[in-house]
Image (cartoon, rainbow, N blue to C red; front, top):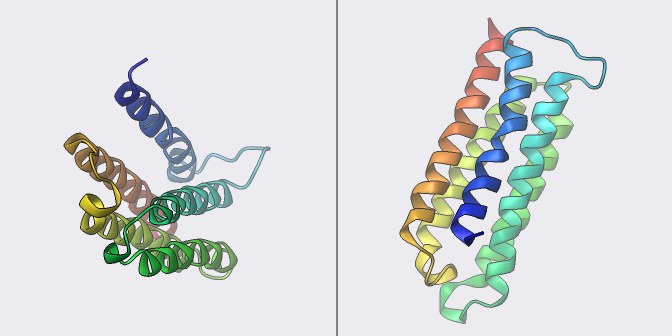
Length: 150
């Protein structure tokens, strides 16, 4: 299987848990397995941390002039943000989900700024691929936020 096909398949398959849990929350369907809101938020925090980890890994092999120290610090900041959002979830779910959504947008912005330095030789399609995934993830967050505030 071509790497691009694998990346697309894994990336879009990663949207399935967002879609299922957002749908359950929107349609107010309970499951005996887990709290739907916690399932959505915890998956969101995991994916945000996973994406931040990519920055960490890419920084390890980066040239000094690409400011890898700043990238390493921001990578850790996103993980701490994701954790904070989980801690906030029971007290302020709207704040928690809004911060998670913002985290995805900010991380994408950082990635785009560092694309050439940290991801040399990466195909242009990846930039659009990441944008579309982030847009769909943020849309799921907005759907859940609307469901919580209606």
